[in-house]
Length: 116
Image 1 (cartoon, one colour):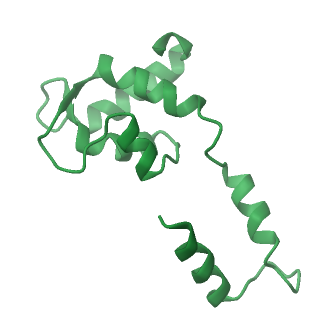
Image 2 (image 1 turned 30 degrees about the vertical axis):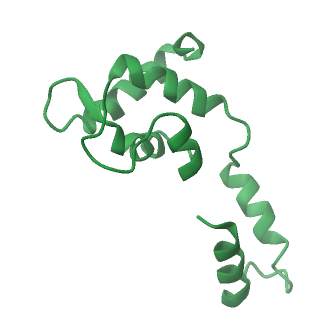
Image 3 (image 1 turned 90 degrees about the vertical axis):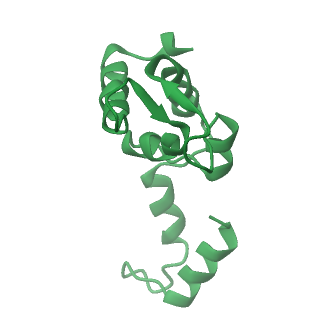
């Protein structure tokens, strides 16, 4: 699955992986999978992170860069995650006065109802 990635994506993923390789051993704690994916401009939910092998406790599982690249490729090709433009389009629905603002109470309600 890592074959789906361009050379630039592989380079970016390796760089992000190296940031979370705190001990310099070429491994990353699976606890940081979500953080690393978010550093690569992806927006995985907690459920997606858990599905691809992320852990909720530190030192449960260590990943090598070769283990991380297929995870990155899988999350990158996932079409369920919305982009920034999608998010802005949805927020425009709540802009009743069409001046680029919305009520705080509505925003709070939306975010709380999403669950994450």
